[in-house]
Image (tube, rainbow, N blue to C red):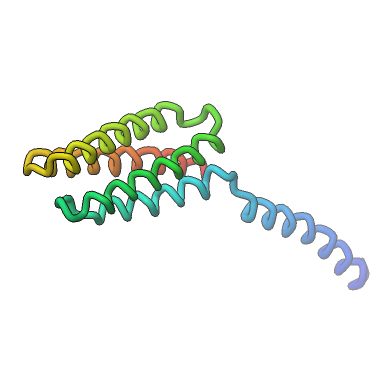
Amino acid sequence: MSSTLRRVVSVSLAVPVAATAFACSSSKPQVCSDAAALKTQLQNLGSSASSPSKLTAIRNDLLAARVDLTQLKNSAKDEFASEIDTLNNALNGAQSAVGSATSSPTAGNITNTAVAAKNVVDSGRALTAAVDDKC
């Protein structure tokens, strides 16, 4: 086989392999980026210490996490339904706890807010870990 023919064969074999590798590495499903956004928001929530002065920040973090969850749910379709429901329930509980702590900032209500926020973070981590397994 001539050297020119070898080069042509080598190039013709390499191009489809390179194109396939490029296509696989650059085309992650939307649910992957939605999970990454949710994960970032959960880190923000996890870093908010519960105290009467931080309740607004926690409320805002919970609202942002709900937006990210809705986007993830829409892109996931029916996948991860159990994890999504668990996080949704945790968000509902945390938003209720923040409401109680805002209207009556007792030590007990502040503690309940901290526990509820931790439940959100834990549920969110379980969801994003499940999504990460698919990405």
